[in-house]
Image (cartoon, rainbow, N blue to C red; front, side, top):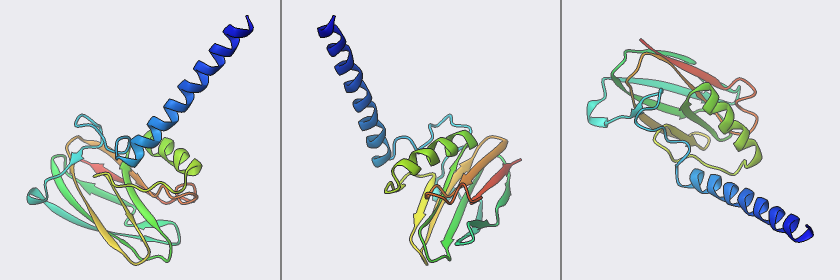
Length: 161
């Protein structure tokens, strides 16, 4: 009985550790932040096919400007993102559920950085871009997943018409 309990406990611990390593590995290599081709938020866009450019500012008041954007289904949009604040900010596209789950993960490991096609992470004063194809009507959310930022209201949405 004691040996079985020990083996079961060891197996459970090994499974938990392998899951944690897998999650960390996915983030470090862009796995969990990158939507699949069938994702409800769209797909990485081809820069040669950009149909519209939108400038977005991130600031230390924990806001995006603009916080709402309207695009047409099928548009490939270049999001020019600038961090006008004095601290790191990011813009990550996703569903509300994905962003909330990812934010919870970021709270546990604040050192994580994003290098996926649906995200841009910027130091103070820096600019970057996301080129994204919004291929399905609906709402795509975005947020800053730096610890404390999303909870402070640093979020927005893209209405895909």
